[in-house]
Every structure is written in C-alpha cells, then in structure tokens.
Length: 141
Image (cartoon, rainbow, N blue to C red):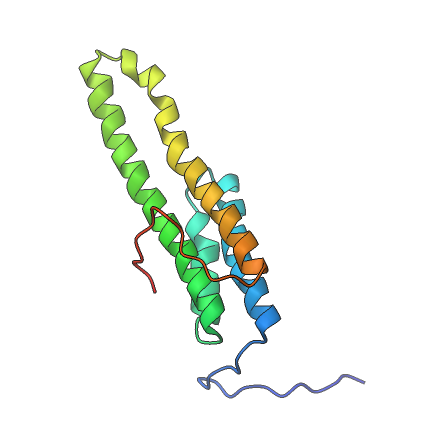
C-alpha cells in the first residue's frame, strides 16, 4: 500500500526549508557548479547554480544567497575568460605567434580561482555561514 503525500497546488509557494536543508542546498549550489565546471572544462558550471537558484530561491534566504553567490562566481569567471581570450589574441599577434604557446595557461587562472571560490563557498554553506565571495560583483541577489 502506497502512502499518500500532500501535494502543493500548482503555482502555490513551497513551504520554507529547514535550516539543515538550506545548508545542504547552498552547499550543492557551489559543489554542483564546481563538478559541472570540471566535467565541461568550464562551460557548464553555471547550470547547477542556476538550477538551485530557480528551484529553491523562494524557500529560504540562506539557500538563495549561496545560490546567487555561486551564479555570481560563474558570471565573474566568464568575464575573466573573455578578457583572457582577448589578451591571448592581442599578445599572440604582437609576439608574431610565439605568445600563443606561452600564453595558453592564461585561461587556467580564472578556472582555478572560480574552483577555489566554489570550494570555500561549499564549506561555508555546509557550516551554515553567510559568505560573499571576494573579487565577485553581486549581480544576482
């Protein structure tokens, strides 16, 4: 015999999360972004952050803040990758092509910084600490 669970009517707000659930989902917004970033070489890291933000943003301020911070880290990383790409092309052309080989690691710097920020964010969220990542503008709130 299956147990019946009460369902929320479509369009009705979900009940608030428990503090433990908020901590878990806040941590998953950072950890999921890090895993997606590693698996996709930096291209899909935002997917986990956006998914957690859209699904759980109205269920608690803590999970909303950490999911927004995770998205902001991803946006900042994207901007830094664009800047790195422009520098790569300009400096590569200026050095008659020799710079292309030596400047390739310039793309790793934003990825490593974003990875470090996501690890710190995941630990802070799991510990129940509010946190705003450094070097990251608050675009999504």
